[in-house]
Each structure stands twice: as C-alpha cells, then as structure tokens.
Length: 213
Picture 1 (tube, rainbow, N blue to C red):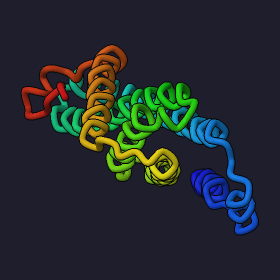
Picture 2: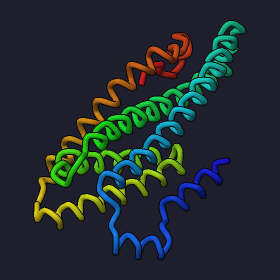
Picture 3: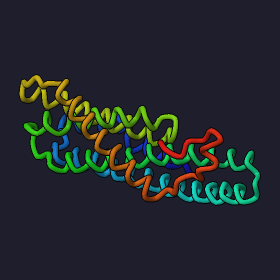
C-alpha cells in the first residue's frame, strides 16, 4: 500500500516532456497551480491523520499492558511497555504538530490570488514545508518525500514571482514567520496529546521512565 502511494505521488509530481513543453508555451495560471498544491497538501494531511490514529491505538494497547504489568508487580515488563509507550507518544506529538502546520499552510495558500501575495504567504509556507520534511523523514519517509515535491513547487512559484515582479523579498522575515507557524502547531499538538494520551503510571516513571514530553 505504501509503495503504491509513493508511486502514485511520483507520477503526479513528475510531468512528462510533452506537459513541460505545453506549460512553457501556455503556462498554467497561478491560481490553478496553487489549487493543485493545496490538493496535494490535503492528501498529506489525511496521511498524517491516519498515522496519528494508528499511533494512538498502539499507545492505548501498550498503556493497558503497562498498567496490567504494574498490577502484577512485574516492574521489568512494566518499564519495557512504558518506554515503548513513551516513544509512540513522542511520534504522535510530531505527527499532530505536522498535521496542524500543514493545515496552516493550506489556509495561507488558499488566500493567494496574485503574485503580490507570494512574499506574504508562499515564502513562509515553503519554509514551513521544508522544515516539516526534515522532521518527518525518519517517521514517515513517503510523506517526507511528498513534502519535498511540494516544496519544489512552492520554490518554483516564488522564483517565478520574483522574475515577474522584479521583487526581492526578506527571506529572514519569511523564516521567522515559518518558525511562528511551527511553534504554534507544536504548542497546540502538546495540548492535544495531553488530552488524548493518558499519562504513564507514576510507579514506572519512578523507575526511570518519564511520563512527560
């Protein structure tokens, strides 16, 4: 399933020679290109949501086993399950934060109507997607790959807008805005994780496993 998902994405992201020639002669309007990028980002959102839900289910199973081991006074097994639970919880927080950040990027791109919006919206969006690509590389490689394709598309739009308007934009300001998006997404993700993932047993944490992240 995963390989098919990556293959389908790759076919969408690598236009044929005839398509590239056609686009050179008759370029795709900005709004249409933005809409295609938004569509791909929404696919990524769904993939992240599916992965988060699987992580939540796995966490609850491990958590239950940890509690049962505690009741049986088997501290070694309890600590093992607690450690596995902690790892899943950390992954779930990363997935949730990424999902929220992608949502913010989508909202920004949906407001873009002309090249004048590129600096204010697309540049921070591109920086955000680039950062998320790195964060997810070791967790969901296929999603990281998809974000790489999306980032290339956004970078291309930024370059074309610069050529069309003769503008030079403040990349530092764009980086700051991207960092703000990521920070807000992480903050909200932490709250959601606290609400959806029960804390690990205190007795396990006293043995060297921290219940907080």
